Image: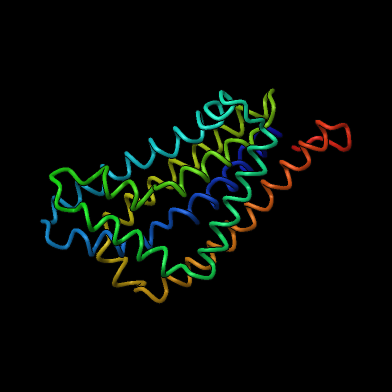
Length: 225
């Protein structure tokens, strides 16, 4: 029973953080605008490919990002603290100036829309899963348990969360016109601010786990979960 509880906790933590930074509903608004000149069939194909590419980006960052940084001598505690700060800063920025962030993503993606194959660049990166998403995924990966059954539950839960986010990206982009009609920009911004607060809380929690790990390494406290 404990394994399933750990899996559920990992899923909820990763899903809330990734959903907050990816924000598929806001992405659907941009996707609808940038692909307005394409046929319906082309837009459906793009939505499917973007969802697939986004899953690969998030899973790769979750699984291998920590090992890549460890290769350069960065400790897990340092990675948790720095990653937590990055996640919290992203949440803070999204909470108070979400419009600027979305306008920047739209401008970056719009500049490259003349390319023949736009599914990966710019529609997946940087519009959907850019550097912010990669940073959050690596920070989540750094929060994994040291070993034992807990790490398998963590990897399973966080991986399922990444796949669920990729599915929500595909769904939101597939029905982008309906999402735009249903929510509009104002309601989407409300959802964005609620998600930003969750992201801020996740960042603070990851930072606290890193501080506990650093204190434990120094012999001054208990280890992080």
